[in-house]
Image: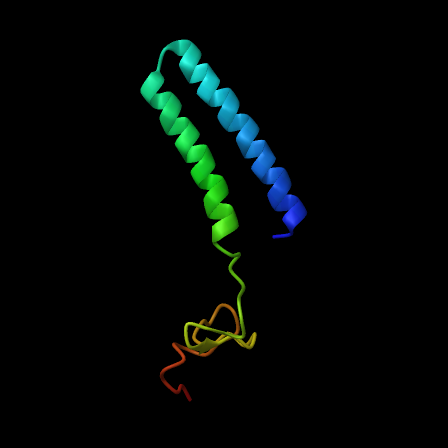
Length: 85
């Protein structure tokens, strides 16, 4: 994800978190206020910490070459393990 999008999303999450925490405080829900604040900042932290998933040619030891093996509905033959004549 590009940095500009991450920054914009982070700002949006901070704004929504601040509004939700203030609203919970106005209702008198002090414990929930801190839960909302923690979850908002945790979401931002996790977004910046963990990279985006990128699929390679080989994912999980299975080569992805576009030829679907084992699915008769998508052009493969049988299960892929057995030879069908």
